[in-house]
Length: 389
Image (tube, rainbow, N blue to C red; front, side, top):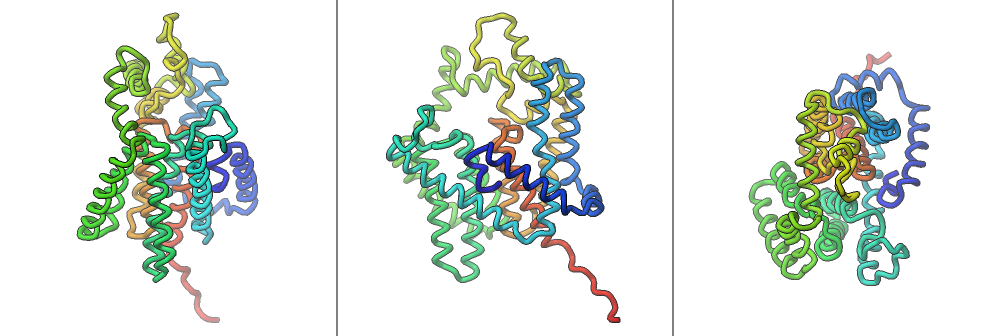
């Protein structure tokens, strides 16, 4: 699953079904039910149940209702993954598999940037061989911090060359984002994620040295990366021209403005599962609008939940994020990774509906599920030996 996720949703879906079948044949149902006293377990299930019930009051075609509920069903895998990796010592292999798969994607990204003809598809841009640059940015940001975490662990075990290799790998991911394919959401999240991780897990002197080195590197990258300058400058330019022409920034502002108006009409329980597109269609009311102005996704996770399930959905969403964040407050490298996964999903969800998207949502599910199980495994007290017979 971890290897296929950056590449193919179909192959990933096949492996997911196989994993689910195998897990259900060996799971201890009694122990699994006992774990549901923890909010990190039951809150994802509560969100799915709300989405399922929300289909009843939605004013939308049933196909749209089922599709929207299906985008939340992945949350049910979080307690299953946590239960599995609380009992399995193979969690690190999952993260290494994802890192290895993204490293292959990184190499192909650089290759397609230098030689675009290696990508056979006509609709792909150089540097983004599969998916899109938003998804690729999410994957590469996680790999930057994952490489850093593994480098620190390996360095402390006196494996200097391996640690240096991981640092170089993280730098290659960063340079790719700066020079090749820059996702604005990923670029904005990078410094915030850096502050979150270093503030918690580094001494202030070490953090100060790191910030200085990163500031120098960022300044050099800025002057050497015209692609990065263009992507950042385009935010202001698109905002300024949004009144006269369609831009991605202008469309987002339009989605958010209309969404707030829709939310006022049904603030408590929302308009129901799968109702977003119908709301935008009714708002158009026969006016001449483009396909970009009628969407089923307002490009903000909070607005997405508020539109479909109101204040109830938003409270459950933030409660889930908080419960998962609090799982990773220990001073361990796996807790560092867990905090990065949760924080990135929260930050990315300001500009996209990452939890409801397929790849980004599954990255959150697998990251939180595996890391949460590994943390619980470490915290779990050893069994008490019985009296000698």
